[in-house]
Amino acid sequence: MEIKRRYMLKKKELKEIKEDLGKIFDVEKIIPKDAPVEKAVLDLGEIILVDGTPLAMINNGKMFPTLKFLLNTSIENNRVTVDMGAVKFLANGADVMAPGIVDADENIQTGDIVFVVDVMHKKPLSVGEALMDGKVMVEEKKGKAIKTLHFVGDEIWKM
Image (cartoon, rainbow, N blue to C red):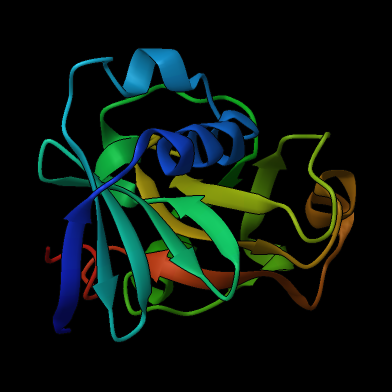
């Protein structure tokens, strides 16, 4: 992964990003007022950096939090929990299949950005786009439930 360009965000651009991120979590607690916020343009999208740490990724017009960020916060909304049998597949970047899901936020709608944790440790494993509603994910016994966008061990994780 190559960084093509990196620059500090202007106030207007930072405000827009805070609004987008505010749909997922409480931004005021995450981005301190005096923290340096940068945008890095990569070959696979754009990344928002706060104090040099990846906070969010913008890919195909969708913004989603990075796993490094999720490890340091406690977000309850848009969370999907999988059984331990799914962990090895998710660590290799596989999409999340419905049979491995044991719990999901009921407010998740198709197209929402969600993050996946394991049932034992509750640590974030991947971030993806919901392919079905939260209630359906838990009830469904076959099919793909989440398209993986970012996972532990990928290029974003290694930044």
